[in-house]
Length: 460
Image 1 (tube, rainbow, N blue to C red):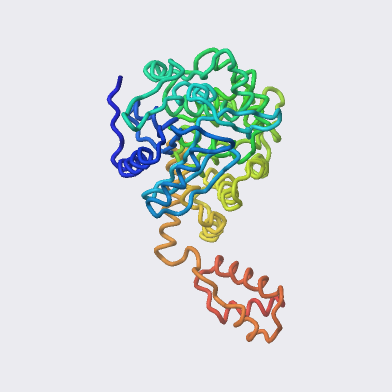
Image 2 (cartoon, rainbow, N blue to C red):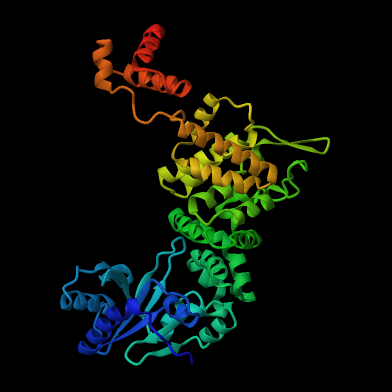
């Protein structure tokens, strides 16, 4: 048995829990992925404490909730956040969020992954969990590890992901289909293989993912996408028919050919290669995943030639639709759309671009300029492309040094324009400000007098 060493940052928290448990007749265990990571010498996170009472429990009492209240009172902490339906609570101790749970049995309705719960035995709790490697309990009173499935420690050693109850593998995934995505993610994160019975159950249960909320799917995808080689996860999701359910727009890129002049892979394979090459930043990685999805709608093949007409605009439209469906924040969608829309300009840049064209490109990029340039370099990747992007960046830097790139701040406030034009406030102010901004892009050194004269001549 491995000698368990707790991370120093958690020692104070655990000492408080151990002392309070002893004083109040409770037994406390660390459970779940935290224990698994201790065995793997990974830095653990998400401290979950399972609490059992040594006293006889009467009626609907929750030892986890009761214990968290005792802790909060003893150490003068904020009251715990209680989730009575699940018999759990959350408490901040020494600036760390700790979740308190009870050993529980779960009852699922057919179209919901949110169970009703009752108190359970330790063994029953271990079996109702997802995978054997996540079903280890560390008893804090004597630092004993309980492996109640009898396979958890062995599976960690053999780098295997296996459901806690192989006889009911499909039921485990059908009750909570998010476990399918978790298995994919943990296989990627830990470098573990998925055992055959578990893998087959994931495949047969993937259609049930529809009952999982878009937000939960999004959160799992975000964790997957920043791993070192996320392509492995997407290939697995494709193989078990999960990708077709959560991201059908990506799945349909498989076997979609591209012009051999530019690419030798189909669009799906190209997308995954770009995904792996991109820095593990969520915004960049999502942009890489979605940057070519418009090719499906604009695909045209004649005489064994493939062309994609206007796929950039289609990719922007499709990516926005996907991200809204998965409940991504509005500002995140705007950033991804900007990267997808504007990175193509670096492909068509030539030395013949005027300074005005450079300024317009920079303005369109907005706050995402650096990400757009970074993604362009990763996406295209050839020496000629890198040289072209470097020259574009050089021209931008030169204009910046000369204060000829882009004006900072407004030339006129709304109040100033009202006084100059002697007109009441209205929509015309925004129109005038936009036109002045255009004039500044054409000539960053334009004076206020010249700008006003031009606006008056245009009779806006």
